[in-house]
Length: 406
Ligand code: DWN
Image 1: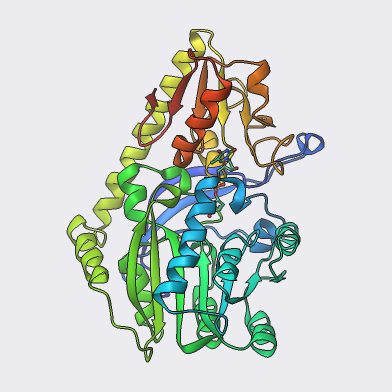
Image 2 (image 1 turned 90 degrees about the vertical axis):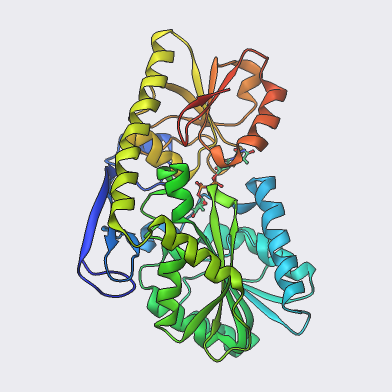
């Protein structure tokens, strides 16, 4: 295997979570008996460009043509992406003459935010079910992957872009060189490319190893991102840590000839990364050892509750719960059901563990003794909602950075 961003072949493997089903491949009842594909989940470190990446690549056609994750399911993300659109429009003086292109535009949440700021918009979304949803939300969307032909289509019909965004998408792309070249062709000379990716430093600090799954091919630091862009006539000129998905990086990139000055924040983050050793393989070996430790603590905690004869329900059926449940071998014997407000998931069964996904109303009928918050990144929002349903003696388990009962 060669490194995805520098083509180096000296990759050092440091963590294997075994084989796992696709994170968003929730099953219908009739598909429960069918054979369920599982693929290796192994992380490697590139000694040249310092990128952490998966060893095994699953076809994007398999993962992204029909997609169950809908950005607007959580109020947190409605606020997050509306604020993002407003801040970018204001900071870069974008207006009705400006074009915003969102890659992996999902249900059009971010683009609706840009539309409210007066911009022209177009989405690129490979999942047919989501592209339809976006169009119903009034957001023009190309139902395809972002590639040379979608770029040609946009330039011919809308012109070049002032801003291209890729939120929780850039880490999902196998050929990021071709992807980035296509962004360069689409952008105006002084256009900006804004990428939001889960931040590897937060994953290591907060032990959020459940974010490791086949959709996420790359696990970025600012060091690996800026190395990549510098090698391809683009430059990171600003970067902010944001708290989405347990901790993400929002990175602003320009063409090397673009007019923006580099914000001191870029160097501050790069220096911090150097200090904590993101270029040192030992950091990742230590992380791997701690992952196995957290797994043991969580399985012991859940096992002890079950030995007491208590009932546990899951709350939130995020993609990451597929990794957590399958790696920690938490299944139907432990969780009676998983609650999720995304109607696309209700009635389906969790990948690999086959636990039924139900709506929150079940809490009016069946009171579990414990609720394992699988969407831990939304614990605050979920605790507020769940208190309304559950009586006082329900306890909540937050699984990471290590199991906590509240
Ligand atoms: O890259 C990706 C990450 C960043 O986002 C994609 N793989 C898709 C997605 O991953 P995820 O499914 O882990 O994301 P979430 O947003 O953590 O999923 C939360 C789940 O919890 C959703 O299924 C919705 C559900 N939920 C709920 O039922 N009630 C969430 C909230 C806040 C709620 O109140």
